[in-house]
Length: 334
Image (cartoon, rainbow, N blue to C red; front, side, top):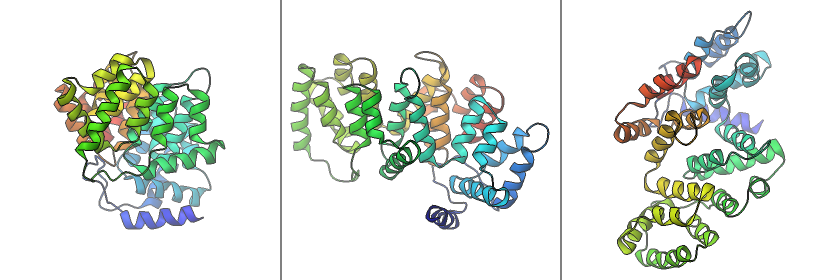
């Protein structure tokens, strides 16, 4: 009940409000009851009208979409996601899932899926941790959702499903405190960290490196990388690559990338996933970035993508993806 009350309050306060980096273009007048009815009609009878579903969900802001979900439940006593799940499939279904579930729940389920069955999808865990690292409240919501859905502490799940030093990295990142990213960075503290890092790197003490880097704000890490290069005449991420491999290398390099430029990190991950670098196309990566960032800063990610790769993100999506899934992504990107 309290969650529904909070949702209504947030929706009323934020109707039609979008971040300046959002790519969602919502109509000036929205009727969420009518939207719920249109979605119901699109999934009733023989077949499903995918175009209607795409048009509504890709042109509504996050809060509006959650309100549509609530109205759908009130009017039909059915869960919109469960209805969509029964009528769609594949990557298209996953993209719609990202649009109708609360973000924390979607990402909590993504991480659970990454740690279920035979083997662990470490790339998914790294990506979710990096996408949310600058949003303390969202991380706390993910932790709560994970516990509520699976009756399991997320950090404990990391410990059970992964091994050190990758395990240490995940636990450290998910346990990060709320940092003041605008606080002044102390050069003397950075110099001390550089001395410690050099010693840890020489002795390949990966757990010590994880502990140190995971305990610093992103703004601190950005300055740390600048001063490390000035001191050692080598990029910090390169020094870390030299002493690590596999998942811990990807984790540490990703952390350095996010600290340097969050949007360029996202653009790079999209490029790799769309072009199939590192093991084939990864639609999961594409969905997680585009669907969760569309309301926030996807416009900036698009700019970074164009600057880095010389092509519009929308054009790459059109060329690499297909069907209703492509239509959903293109609408979100544009």
